[in-house]
Picture: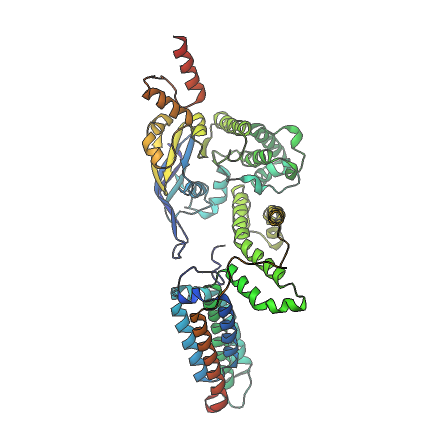
Amino acid sequence: MDAIRLENVTYTYGAGTPFEKRAVDGVTLGFEKGMLSGIMGHTGSGKSTLVSMLNGLCRPDSGRVLLGGEDIWADKKKLRSVRFRVGLVMQYPEYQLFDETVRADISFGPRNMGLEKGEIAERVSEAARFAGIGEELLDKSPFELSGGQKRRVAVAGVMAMRPEVLVLDEPAAGLDPAGRESILNGIREYCRATGATVIIVSHSMEDMAVYCDRIAVLAEGKLCMYGTREEIFAERQTLAGLGLGVPMITDIAYELRALGIELGGDIYTVEGVASSIRKLLAR
Amino acid sequence: MHDLVLGQFFPGDSIIHRLDPRAKLILLLIFIVMTFAANSVSAFIILLAAAVVSAALTRIPPSVFIRGMKPLLFLLIFTTVINVFMTGGEVPLFEFGIIHIYKEGIINAVTVTVRIVLLVLGSGIFLTYTTSPISLTDGLETLLSPLSKIHLPVHEFSMMMTIALRFIPTLVEETDKIMNAQKARGADFSSGGLIKRAKALLPVIIPLFVSAFKRAEELATAMECRCYRGGEGRGRLHVLRYRARDAVFLTVGASLLAAVIAINILYPIYRL
C-alpha cells in the first residue's frame, strides 16, 4: 500500500482575480512505503504546491490526500498530528531558524510533539547525525552558521520529528557539490535506516538519477510521467520537450550509442558509465 | 493573508488606469471635499452617480468593490447605531423606555453611512485599485515637490514610501512562508490564551526581523553601488505628463464640485 497518496488533487491560486493560476491540475500519485521518490518539473510546474498538500499546509480545492489510507482532511483536529507524521522541509529552509542554539532549534519540532526531555535529546542527536551536523555546532547560535550548515540544521529540525514520510523541497539547491552530496547522502541514510518514505523535489537530473528509486515528472500542474529512472530517462525527447532533459552523463551515453559504441548497464550515473567505459577499454 | 482586498492594486487598461497619477490624486481630493461639502439629497445623488460612472469606467468587476466594503461592515453598523440612538432632536419619532429615536438621528446615520461608503469607494476607484503603488508615489512626489523649496526632504520621503510599499507584499509572502515552515514543525498559532499565542509567534517574528534587516542592508548596498545619493539633481525614468484625458476628468471633477457647492448655496430647501 502507498504510504501517502494524492487522489485527483487540484489547486488554483487567486480564483476569481486576474492573477488566477491553476497550479495543480488533477494529479493522482502514490508514494510507496520505504521508497525514495523524486518529483521533478520545470519552474512553475506545481511541484512546491503539490508537496505542501502532502502535510496539509495547502488544502486541495478538490481531491483527497490519503496518509496510510486515511484522508488527512477528514478530521481537522488531527491535522497537527499529520504534520508530525509527514515532515516537510520547505525550499530554502534556512530562513525558518529562530532559536538561541542549534540544539534548541532542532528540538522545536519534538518539543511541539510534547515528548520528554530524554527522548528529545536522543532525537536531536540522531537527527544531527543524519544531517551531518557536528557535535561542536550544537551549542552555537544558528545565525553564526554558514548557509550550508543552516540548511542542514533546518533539515535536522524536521528529521528530529522522525516523520514516517519525509518531504524535501529542493534540499540541495544553491549548495556546493560537496554540500549537495553530503546532504543527499544523509537523506538517503535516513530513508534506509528508518524505513521512512522520502520524497525529494529537485530539478537536478543528476541527483534524481543517483538517489531516487521512483521519479514523477510534473508539467503545468499535471503529472506527465511516473516510473523508475530507467523508464523516465528513456523518454529523452519528451523530457527535452518539457525543458528538462536527462542527466548529462546519459546524454553522453546516447551520443556514444549514436556513434556505434554501445554502453551496457547503468547509463544514468557517472560511476556506472565510467565503469562500463573502463570495461570497454579493457577489451 | 491573501484576502487583503481593501487597498490592493487591480491591474487593468481602462481610461481611469491610464490617467496621470497626479490627476487621480487631485480627483480624489476633489471627491473627498465634495463628499464632505454635500448636505442635500441632490448633491448626494450627483456624487453617487459620479462614483458609479467612474467605477464602471475602471472596468473592474463590481464584486471587487463589494468585497472591499466588507471589512467596513462593522464600522458602518456601529456608526449607524450610535447615530440613530444618540442624536437628539425636537420631536421623537419613536419612544420606548429610555430609547428615543429622532428624525435627525436617522438622517445623520444615513448621511454618515453614505459618506463613509463614498470615501472608500472613491479612494478605491481613483487610487488603490487603479494606480500601482509606484506610480502613486511618483505622483505624490511630483505634487509635493514645491515643498522641497522650504527644505522638506520630499524625494527622500517618497523613496521611503516607495520602498515600504514595494516590500509589503514581499514581507507578507515571507511571513506566510515562515509560518508554514513552523507549522510544518508543529507550531500552533491558533489555540491557547493571549500570552501563549504571542509566544507562539516568536518563531515567526525572529526570522522575519532577521531577514528584513538583511534585506534592508542588501538594498542599501545595492543602491550605493549604483551611486544613489538622494534627490539633488536626479532625473527620472518615467516622466509624468498630463494628457487630454486628464484635463477632461479634472474639468468634470471641478464642475461637479462647483455644482455641489452651488446646490448648497442656492437650494437650501433640499437641505437634509
